Image (cartoon, rainbow, N blue to C red; front, side, top):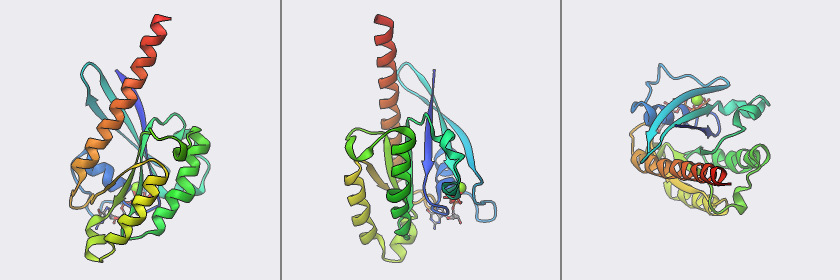
Length: 193
Ligand SMILES: Nc1nc2c(ncn2[C@@H]2O[C@H](COP(=O)(O)OP(=O)(O)OP(=O)(O)O)[C@@H](O)[C@H]2O)c(=O)[nH]1
Ligand SMILES: [Mg+2]
């Protein structure tokens, strides 16, 4: 059994908590029940691979936590994660590039721009709104550029309608499997030496 720390970051209001709820519980939280996250929220999700059971510790960070320092210790040790922005509000993609990617570099010592194989996924949420407001084409173009620059997989989803959540989960499973395989490789090697 292994535990893997998985982080979900991005600007406030982009829909991180809604996405995690849709992913882990299969439901989009109702408007009245959802509140801005304070600090960070923690959920677990179990995945079973061939031989091993994996518990993902999902850390859903408050977008507003980027103004505090306490998140440093919580991000430390993360093995994979989602960088979430709002497809209908491109300033939130800039926050990914100008704030969260540099934080990952600093806190996790992981330079995404020079690491072709990494376990982070760029997620554009609120696909439903971007379509309705005719903002999708521009958003996809910008996002694909950022994804290319930082070697990220990119998925456009709607936590609200559930569109493309299956694709996102597929990618998440792929990344988690890679982390698990990497770790068992290390264990095997350690045992042998
Ligand atoms: N239309 C639409 N609204 C969404 C979607 N995802 C989230 N929302 C709405 O966006 C608002 C913010 O969602 P949250 O999940 O609280 O966002 P957050 O990123 O967790 O925000 P912080 O906790 O403040 O960082 C809520 O009113 C959600 O109902 C989506 O895919 N489509
Ligand atoms: Mg939240």
